[in-house]
Amino acid sequence: MTHRTTGRAGALAAVVSAALLIPAVTAATPAAAATPTVTCTSAKAGLAAKLKKDITAALSGRKGTVAVGLYDRSTKTTCTLRATSAYDSASTVKVTVLATLLWDAKKHNRYLTSTEQSLAKAMITKSDNNATSKLWKQLGMTKIKGFLKAAGMTKTVPGTGGYWGLTQENVNDEQKLLQLITAKNSVLSDNSRDYIQKLMGQVVSSQRWGTPAGAPSSVSVHVKNGWLQRSTHGWRVHSLGTFKGAGHDYMITVLTQDNSTMNYGVTTIQNVAKAIHKDLVPTKAGVTRFTPTSQPREAFVAVPPQG
Image (cartoon, rainbow, N blue to C red; front, side, top):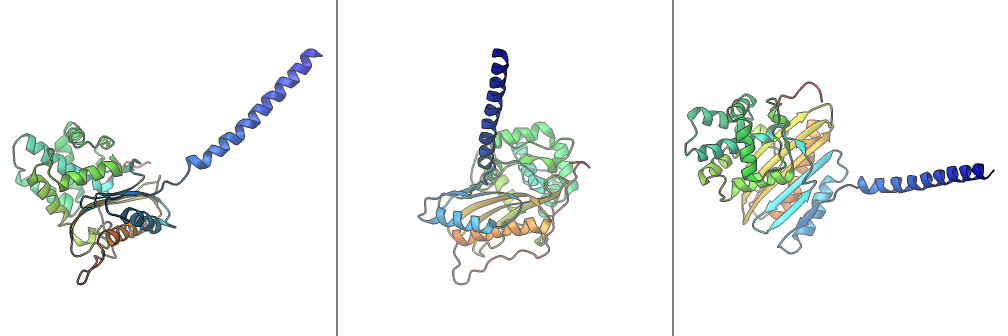
């Protein structure tokens, strides 16, 4: 009898222990799945709170997964949301390709050839995929990784098998890249930085959507976008932009995925951009706001058939 009682007691204790474990696991789930919130800081009184409120409102009710980065040198303002989450780059990696080309040319103390200039212009202003593939192959993985290391873009992972559009990037690293392009540094020469900005300022009108939405006419606009559809995470739609003027010098990265359509992702990005431009640069007399094309375009990048 003693053995039976002990056996039942042990079994009962095991059941009780298991039952106690279940609520603990369940209770932890909501915390782990909590939606990240926008974080902002600023040297200008009241600006951080306003940006946090307005970016959050711009994303309210929007489906999809959105990552945001803002940095304004003038007011020392920073906003982030999901800044370390990785996304397939699509065509936004083309800025990294051009920066790598210029970084490598500087190391060898040479100018770009006329062919390289032609490829670079097509890659950035028209998002030409063939031009990108040629430069990607010419550079090779060693040089691309070398630039990423020099730039401190430690979480960016180049796409393999020639699939540069599947490069893994995050907001933090893209903001580092935009900062390198827009201020003096030891990685890119002043001429290189000017060249990248010049091409990003000449992007064809059908591709000037995303972060420029709502930008005041008093600032210069430089942009590079990308989109990509896959069976997992639906549409990825991204936009990188740098803006200077009206006493400000700022850059915006918005990366999105899980969008139902391309246009849905574009709208989400533009809602965020309009809120940021409005808060940073309030409208003054004679200043208009940029309205992007109603028919946004971008190059489809090559991806493997599955995934």
